Image (cartoon, helix red, strand yellow):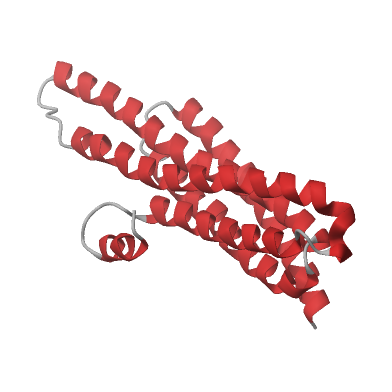
Length: 204
């Protein structure tokens, strides 16, 4: 999706895109900055010893950027059937049970997408840690900016997990999904803050 179109739709009253798509797009932007740092590092004599590693990370980021964009679109795709499920009739016991089953299936789908955004964000944080240490010093500030975008992608996507698991009737499944999200938020924010502090130390 063209970025200005995405922003216009995000700003409107339309239910999608929303926070989930925005989190994925934030991840894509952070990823793009990471790729820039890698590209500015490659081919420089000063960083020749890390050329192979940075090249590998660049290829990994290129795949991740596609993933972030796919997840932004997927977040929209899974919301539409969930919105429809909320409007299913529930007048009889049979209708109530049918609605419950459909809701559970679609709430799960809507929870798994932001979890995947979080997983992609965690992978990016590992890459950014390397780029902070071995990337071009001229672009270290961009590593810091990238980290903040990825931090937001991880913490933001968690909100979409929680809002969907909160409506699940299967509380055991909801708790397991929340636990996965909790762990990634904790580890992700700690890692992002640690990398960001290292960048600040190098800049000041």
